[in-house]
Length: 227
Image (cartoon, rainbow, N blue to C red; front, top):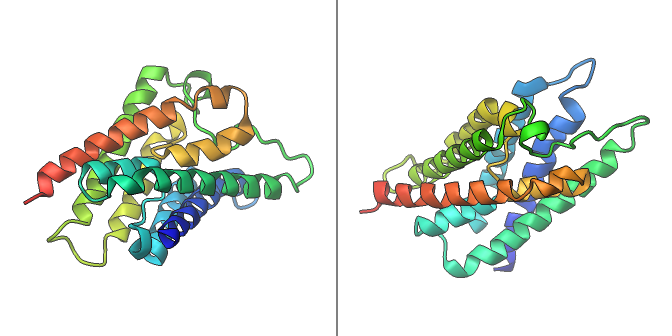
């Protein structure tokens, strides 16, 4: 179990550091900012790389919603759910702390939302609560459905990390303007703790909607692929 928890810690650290780091450090850089597309690709690449690095150790969840979804899909023992989630959240917080330390080393740096998620005034596109709830439910549900499908019997063995990483990239391309894309309560928690204020106050949505969406996605995936 220790190695599994370490894998979840490192995987979630890399996802938060790489994805949120792309948004905080590189997206708006004047000379060669990677922009919206680059941030979306960065999140997908973090999952793709860690899926192959440690996915064989822990299953490669790196996300409480994935852990819950894989549990409802019958792919994760109930006893692993809470320890995995704790390891994931710690990994995200440590990654956010490292990212904050690096970013604040630049003179005049302003954290703004620090890659946090939000609705209403904190939504990048100023989308309301209802739109943000639906976005996170659908995006997370389909993400888990894709994970279950690509790791099921009959799927191409050894290639699951590629469609899963691409799915996360696609999700970011669609949903960054709405919620700044969560689909991952751990990823949302780390940056929000450093952004503070209203971002912490809105954090409930980015736990509730992804967990519910993930649970439903896991159940539908189980129905679709179970013998």
